[in-house]
Image 1 (cartoon, one colour):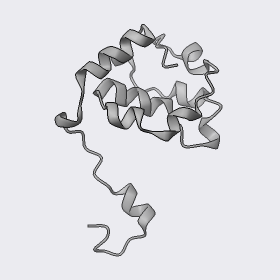
Image 2 (cartoon, one colour):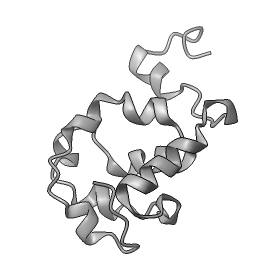
Image 3 (tube, helix red, strand yellow):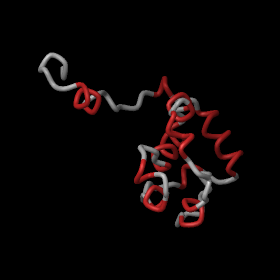
Image 4 (cartoon, one colour):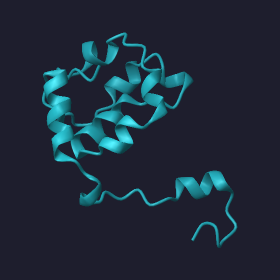
Length: 105
């Protein structure tokens, strides 16, 4: 649709389908994330404290909140193939400030 209307490529990407499809989900991925982090990932209610306290977030497109959402939904390919994942400095600010005591790092 965006291409047929002549929108720029950046806007076309923004208008891309962002829906969740069950076929894309891997429930086992959520369990592995919870096992590694020793926290319950679905306890995250997306308050944004982690991203707000992240020193990498203002200078990049890295958003720990987005990774947590992907983990809860079981979107393994999107979570692990995102190159922004390597922008985490492991400063543990997100873990220290999380109101639900979730350890995303």
